[in-house]
Amino acid sequence: MPLQPFAPNRGADKKIFLLKPRGFCAGVVRAIDVVKIALDLYGPPVYVRKEIVHNKHVVEELRAAGAVFVEELDEVPEGARTIYSAHGVAPSVRVQARERNLEVIDATCPLVTKVHLEAVRFARDGYSIVLIGHKDHDEVIGTLGEVPERSFLVETVEDVDNLRLPDPARVRYLTQTTLSLDETRDIIERLKQRFPLIQGPHSQDICYATENRQMAVKAISECVDLLLVVGSQNSSNSKRLVEVGGNAGVRSFLVNDRGDIDPAWLEGVRNVGVTAGASAPEHLVQELMEFLRDSGFNVLEEIELVDEDVRFSLPSELVVTIR
Image (cartoon, rainbow, N blue to C red):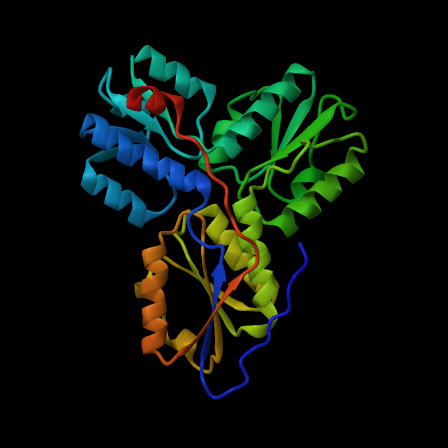
């Protein structure tokens, strides 16, 4: 995707570059809709394993509507209706759900499911699987659980250097969907150097929304003095946006909402970029924009690099009920 050059503000007014696409991706919209529809259809309580998406404002809103968030399924009453988060689960979780007779609705993002299916296919064909990702992230835990005996996790280029595999000639790699494009590219390049026969999936695992938001940050990096990313601290794709901005030489901060902004960040700033991670609600962006306008940023330019028109269908468990 070519980067379009944007001119920084040289006038007396302070300017906001508002990036688009930003905020909710199709997988997040689907997951939140699943919880809301389940609450409407069945009434509370509806149990959700882990945070449905990694945003505290979304979780609190759904909790107020009657969703009960739990860490593990043993906290759910036997036979209760339970939703898996957008990040997916390991097969062991599905087994536990069956043993407890839970009425499961699977809100796993289809792009995460794609990675799970690739892991199973590679293992079935006799390959070792190198998964690039962050070890404590819910998505990675679920993917590793598909074929734990054949999976090897790497987070850095140094991890690749220390990697020991049963058969270096039979290796495939997969990635977490919310990684930094640049960092992942470096790790893949090192994997190819160490294991020349390694191959990845037919299409990259890093999701379209993660890529689009990172490319937008790069596009404005030369014309902003500050980047504000709306998102929660446990949101991988939001944290990667901050890293992308920082790597491009822009002071970049992750904020849950406008209350996290330190007014000192704005001192001497003429141009500020604003974006949001894929699980951040739009109303938080608009509230942040209001704060910036009150702080003297009275010129707005909304920059749209690509039109996102991706939509995912609802899980079959809900579709059958609705019909």
